Amino acid sequence: MKVSLAALLAVSGLLANAQDAASAGGPGRPPLKPLVVPKALEDSINRRNLLKHAHQFLDFSKLSNNTRAFGSKGHQATLQYIKRLLDQTGAYDIEFEKFTYAYSEATSQLYVDGESYPTKGVGYSPSGNITAPLAVVNNLGCEASDFPEAVKGQIALVQRGTCQLGLKVAFAGAAGAVGTIIYNNIDAEPISGTLGAPNRPEGPYVPVAYISGLNGKAFIASIAEGNEVVANIRVQSFVEDRETSNVIATTKTGDRNNLIVAGAHSDSVPAGPGLNDDGSGSMGILEVALRLARYRVKNAVRFIWWSAEEFGLIGSEYHVEHLSDEDRQKVALYLNFDMIASPNSGYFVFDGDGDATDIPGPPGSEVIEQLYRAYFDSHNIRTGSAVFGGSSDYQPFVDVGIPSGGLMTGASGTKTAEGAEWWGGVAGVAYDVCYHLACDVVENLNVDVWERNSKAIAHSVASYALSIEGIPREQRPPVRSLRVSKLSYEERLHLSCDHDDDII
Ligand SMILES: *[C@@H]1O[C@H](CO)[C@@H](O)[C@H](O)[C@H]1NC(C)=O
Ligand SMILES: *[C@@H]1O[C@H](CO)[C@@H](O)[C@H](O)[C@H]1NC(C)=O
Ligand SMILES: [Zn+2]
Image 1 (cartoon, rainbow, N blue to C red):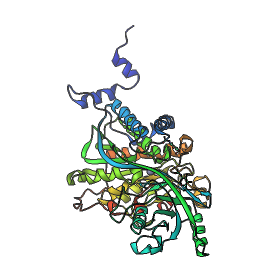
Image 2 (image 1 turned 180 degrees about the vertical axis):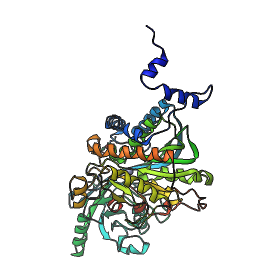
Image 3 (image 1 turned 90 degrees about the horizontal axis):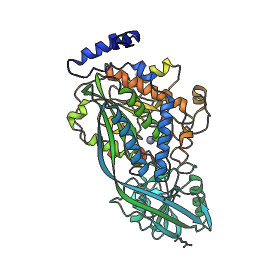
Image 4 (image 1 turned 180 degrees about the horizontal axis):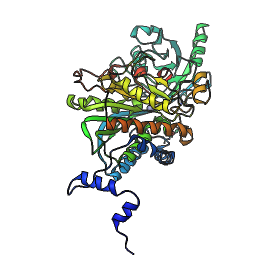
């Protein structure tokens, strides 16, 4: 028996829609897709698909010694995976925005009196094996005058804080120090970092070891008692130029004069595979992009996977710096998702109006904040506030006046008692105990929170793809220079900045 197509469609109730779509497409053109429906897009996001990507990302990290650091094999495989899945939908124009940046890795050891002390490597440090007495630097070592005569031929001992690690080390080199030990400004072990730039005009770098605040203070106390503390620091490091890319996918439908941009960074730190930081955001926007492909949008949506975020927002800064004035006007708003599945999560919404953090985003950012607050309210989830503090890829957009917002679930900051009451989890413990460490693997992901935040991304992207009512679209003033390039390393760097100040 032959069943007509029309009858089948009628039975399944699809006839009216199909005819609608076909006629809307016009004669000879493919039928138009249905216009996106926020609730439908949100409902299409599920943990099964997210976790499928997560296992892929972890596998990619195994191609390069358990990291997806920018330019590594694991990172390149991540970018190809994103491109391949998006290509298959046929719904996006995809571009690789290429740039080159100096990559560096370093490991270090410290021995004093035959005893070994835990250290972290500092990228861009020269290699070396140096034995010399320690000389204490005045203040925070942010001025050349903080380095006394005594550092000459010795190892400068300097506290972290206020200015870039690289500046302290360059001043130490200029003063004739043969090495530098930086100690943390809190008792805790430091998080591995970089000197922030491959070299500097203030002086030559010398080998660096980065130690805990507790050990730093112990050395200073011993020197204050009149002891000579002789240290041996050993650094193995390398620096190389790496070409890498931001991946930019723009919907083929929708008005490109009102671009909705959603971003996450594709790279991890060298120390680990970065499943939460920022696999979670990368996979969250990927999954939303894949589901959005079935729909038509009014405002074009652009998803961007930033590269080299962990070396200082390099990819996002490159992108925004290279936007013409005309193209900058076309970006209606920017949404950032960096770490949205922390194991001891909080639900943090960027503080667009600045009422919680005193740092508002550009006008319109408060509208984005309200959309997310309303979304979580409707799911009976309390929200905290994240600050536009320069530690992720929203910053270049904020700096040029583009309304911005986004979500995050916390990094190395500690969950408060109130936070534990609101969201469960453990008070007094970091939001992500595996932040920037090798243990940021699939098991580190809080899948419930990840799924909820990915649904929130879907809701926001679909809503703005339909309407940007409330978001100001006045002509933005021309940009003279990006603020981000002037920020101190500690302010702008994900890598050395421990995010404790990022949430309220
Ligand atoms: C791989 O990573 C481990 C741990 O970070 C490190 O000790 C080792 O030297 C690395 N191996 C290579 C080939 O980079
Ligand atoms: C580094 O120097 C120390 C002390 O001078 C020496 O014992 C050690 O073998 C050296 N290590 C390397 C890798 O050169
Ligand atoms: Zn990150």
